[in-house]
Amino acid sequence: MFAERVDNGKSHWRGPLTKRGEFFVPPVALDRASGVPLHRQVYLQIARAIREGATHHAARLPSTRVMARLLRVSRNTVLAAYDELAADGLVRGERGSGMRVWHGALFPETSLMALRGVIRAAGYPARVLPAEDPDGNPLYLRF
Image (cartoon, rainbow, N blue to C red; front, side, top):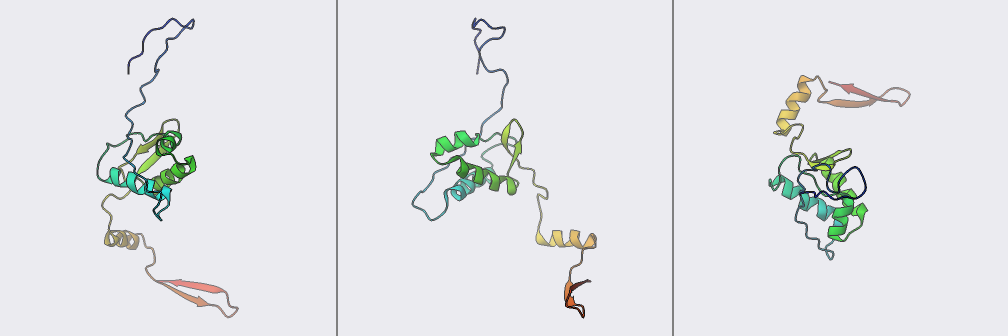
């Protein structure tokens, strides 16, 4: 986007001062007659688009207000969907720049067996035997 120099009586010119980056507006089609909550529908469709690679790493999602206006839903609906996306590690909130797509999972190729090996190597107990002392207080024997 280009800014044009306009004499507006100030020491600066009208136009964008910084380049914000590329927006990623995922295709979201809501079915209001469905039994699935709207925030869950928004989450599922954005998550699918991110996982299928429809965007690049660090692309910005629209603000919650803009997305709510686009979808004609409450801002709280979009906030709940964005929170779920963040909890799953698909987006990351950055102060001053909104939500960004985040493809960097903590363990990109994790499987249950790989995690079990990490847990055992860390000395975490694989088994716990619950018991009680003579006074009825719980005891947990880890082995």
